[in-house]
Length: 156
Image 1 (cartoon, helix red, strand yellow):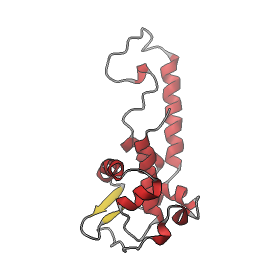
Image 2 (cartoon, helix red, strand yellow; image 1 turned 120 degrees about the horizontal axis):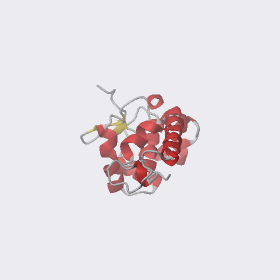
Image 3 (cartoon, helix red, strand yellow; image 1 turned 180 degrees about the vertical axis):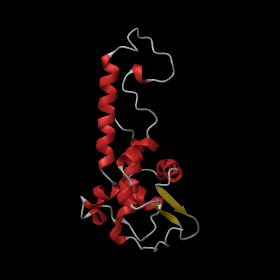
């Protein structure tokens, strides 16, 4: 199984916001830190905002911040809002067009579901906070030390 770039950069965006706690983050800053286009990050922002993982603050001094505390945002939370499909084989598809005579009695489907559930369980064990704390120099690595900071007002 391979996660999409959307999931990869969604996690990175959340990590950036967590490392930049008490301040609003701006998409151009995040894009520069990771070497990715702003347009791509704006696209990723939509599902994260809809799921409440990120909040946007409008206005001249606006930006983005985490919608919840970083220790409450698991990697599973991110994956489930950024990935379209977890179909590991044709028999995982829910479209009713599976052309296999063993669909209801095959051990492969059961084994793959068990593996997928184990994958999800491991992702649920790790939070954005865990990832940020694992890199004590994250602010330096992401170039945050040169960025003028705008304090973030508490979430309403």
